[in-house]
Amino acid sequence: MMKTVVLLSLALMLFGRGYDAPDNRSQAKNLLKMIDLDYKVARLTGCHYTYDTTSCMDKTIVDLSTCNVTEANQTIKWIQVVPDIFFGRHMACMNEKVCINVFTKEKFGSPMCCRRINTTYKQMEADLFNLIPVVSEVALKQGVRIFDDVKKPMFSIGNIMFDMDYMEPRDEVKGDVARVYLYMDERYGLDLSQQQQEVFKRWHKLDPVDAHECTVAEIILKVQGGHNTLVEEGCK
Image (cartoon, rainbow, N blue to C red; front, side, top):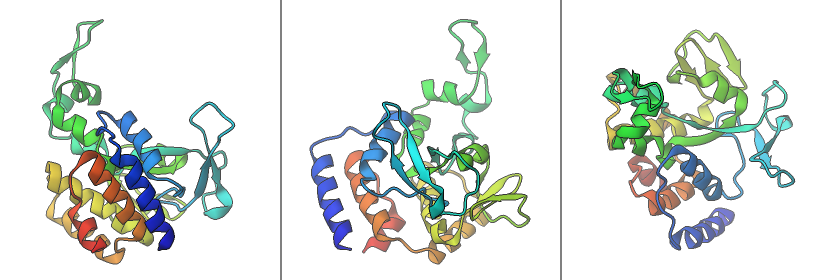
């Protein structure tokens, strides 16, 4: 607990000097690397990782002895907890040909189109609450899958189960995932189904807010604004 308090104090001093809210996913990822401080654990599998300070590249080293991921040569990727294919599913820029390719002059609709013309999409894509570090194998397999209960697993990575449409994390981090979905729904209107809301509320109760979540949420509030209500309530 003392370590968390010290880290929070240092972080709030750093970010209190003035950091602009990120405009895109790349900026958000770079900010989160600073916010994470010395917390270097892949969020879904629990693998410990470090940054390779000998490399000029954005390279990470994953210690596979700290988790039960068996695939070798893992790195760390930052993924959207709520993927853009889900939060942008009702947007015209995703489904209709409303943008024009400057080279071919052909019309198209896609995440790239939304990034150009839809302010809400850009805010959601850059939201600091919605990005987490995971091992590269998880990032690769996420694809268009969203988080939900998996009834008949097709395969697993560590303790994460996958089927054709969904991925289900280990119990210890289900609350972290649930609170992101419920926050994104509250702030932007994800149009979650009643069944999805029930799943995430159950996950929230199963895995309560922890000290790290409180630390990161307080810093994010200073950087981009926007309260994650369930995290704040848990931190009290």
